[in-house]
Image (tube, rainbow, N blue to C red):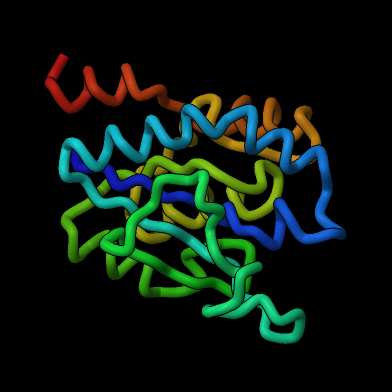
Length: 170
């Protein structure tokens, strides 16, 4: 198993724009420590970190704008891989699948937004690319906490501790 971490759609537009849902922001903030711990875990093991961005040209959500960017509170770096998408599933951009194959990754651990939309769409699309997906238990957010529970109930989840044991052959 060689996993990559996929940080899905944690963008200023969804969290800090005046029209953003306050429950969504609270959900991300509640999980921020685990999100950053996961990024650090993958970075320390020199495993790929891929940051997924939603791009909506008609709404001005495009690269180079503040709303497009990931908040500074999320510990991504310029060297992390980046992929944009215009549909719910990040795999709608074939660069994601190609990137995983290039890096030799057969597994993807997903965290971020939103549990009942883009996270689920990306999770289920991973199978089409022969990638084994997991949701990071406790790392997926939503404006509705019931959606988080639903996503974690129907998808395979994994904790960092379980991932560590798997990579160490335990």
